[in-house]
Image (tube, rainbow, N blue to C red; front, side):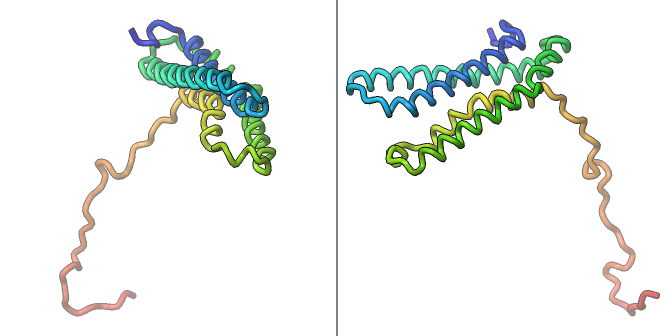
Length: 177
């Protein structure tokens, strides 16, 4: 049974955002755990758990976002519940949260670039997963905001070939007056 049939819109949005925050937490923990010196065995266990929970959180987040989008497209939920969600995700605190996550990422990169630690890690892969709550909020906002109606295109039924009576006439040319 599909997720959108079992869960409400608010539950799916919470699941997607929660998994995005879990990914953010895992990557943040991973980024700063290297400053603590642990034994190899403990480091491998922690790394394995991070990988396991990271993959699980990513899969659940993307499935929840896809189910949310399918539920919106199929008009599965009533408009009042969607309006509540829209109000919450368009609230200034959600925008402030997005900017805080971006500031944390930029601050981390600015502090980490001159350090020796940066040379041994790939900040690009961290940045993608670090931005997962921002990605989830963006997808949820885009799904909740109505799409503008498309105006009819001039290219569909209105296109007619250009016809001129002068084409192919190589006779005398008359200057335009």
